[in-house]
Length: 183
Image (cartoon, rainbow, N blue to C red):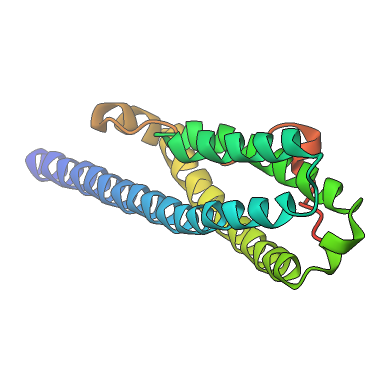
């Protein structure tokens, strides 16, 4: 009788460990998928920036510093190799975009340019997609991190090599504000 009880306990513990492992793998895969989706939107935004810079160059010839800062922020963001680096660089890119649109307010001819207006509209839409994908990514990361930080998951997570994942958080207060896209 005692043998059956021990066997039953071993089976229960084994089933729990297996369920924990498989569930955590599913969450890790969901994090990778969420990041890949967000990365697609980020890359689309990166592709828009050169067109935006070229359009603004024609009107705002005295704003080379702002345009250069945006181009450099884009380059740094594109060169980031880890999600953590990417998240850090995205804050700088967001700030540079805000500066560019603030500068554009001083050039009425630029604000009336159809190409510029189309790029603003496209960028505004892209910012919404990025925000939505960031929310989903953070929700999945939160689930994963909670799973590996509560007992007995924290013990099993260490055994299986699961570590806390980084959230995609916007840094400074000015970077938390939306990019001003005005028409």
